[in-house]
Image (cartoon, rainbow over the protein chains, first blue to last red):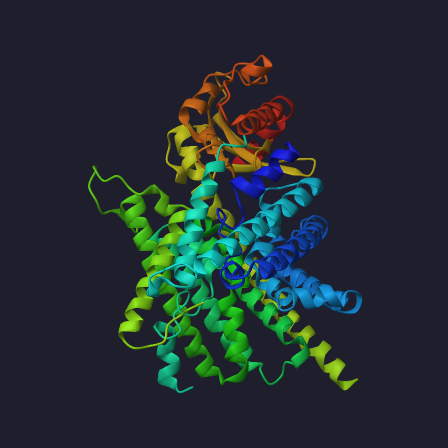
Length: 191
Length: 203
Length: 197
């Protein structure tokens, strides 16, 4: 499995947000401003990668050997929630600036389906450690890319003459749909 | 909140995922067919009702510091149970819904209602609230799924609706269709609600 | 101090109840889940290979353990004679993980009856093309004692254009099965005989 193609595939072809439908809540809620979107994107890349590493390790060294795979969902979400807590505490002490910049996003990332989704996909696709890291970083980057692009579009939309009923989330969703369609152009780029 | 209000608010006033913008991921992902939408809605409703019930029962016992953590354990346990029951009794559906069944655990609706309602209200009321929001969610998903299935595959709940010559809008059952369909539905709801004189979503 | 104790006790209790409930559920439901998985996932494949109803074939199942892997094997009996086998094995190297394949074997002719894809996570429309019968029928009639290869590597299987990884995974899966037949054929027959008694 060529790692480069894995990364490209995860960012563009199977974009975690536009093709795999993961991470939509923050997508619609947060992407109104470019600045906040970049912050969210970076936070997600960081948390998703860490979460993937930990969940992968727990799965392969604890759950699988003891035949406890069915408890995967519970274990993973607890790991993610704890991780986010630790990161929050750590940032609060070490880097006040970054902590303030990320603000409310950090706790929100716990319920971000993208993070949990990436962790689950790593197991589903049976990646080894290196593939898992690459896939996680790439998928989260795909999320960040989509959300930043989207924020740019939304800032434009706010000053466009959109029909009143469609203003806000409604037209944002339609725009996301068109973006998703555009990303379909990457199909066939890999394999 | 009174009983009647709790019973009805999830069906229009706080309809998810449209008026209460929560639970978008599954709404987009599993609504490629009406059956999947309904299945997901019902599974999520089950989890929602019982998580509200347990969390409400324990609301005076759980210390504030471990609130979110405890909620997560309760919700995740229910989700794993639902996962197992679905695999045992509704296998094809569980295969179709795939990773979105475990993803119910991060469905913002459930944690959201636990935090906003169940942790501050009596048991029966919380269960009713859960039922109301859950049914609303199920209806939304089923309708969305139906539209996408009929236009995108020419069938409804697996039954052929149009004749042989119908060329389905295939993109409807794929990602772009989901976003666009949801957006237009939301727009229509906004227009309708404006006509009724309510304030609408302007996120 | 009291607060911390309360914290820990409450959490521990919740986790204990949760753990208990899940373990009970698992014990009760696991056999049924396995059965459903067989019925929906392997049933149709078996039906296509042996042209007999799945209900008849699903009961004829043994598990072949090799190292820390287990391989499900289904068999077809004609009276007392075992005339067919269907062995399932994962083929690593697919674009998105293993592709699980099942090969039907005619024991009398010592040839392959056909190949079925049991499970895959390949890209729909690209890698998923390995499910097409035009690709899979290349396995029909091949001898069970020789490994297969893609034409690009000098063999007899044409890969699906644009889905090289997926095709390779199916080939590795089939070679695993051929290996199992060559190395553990006797073990398989012995396990079946024990089961039939």
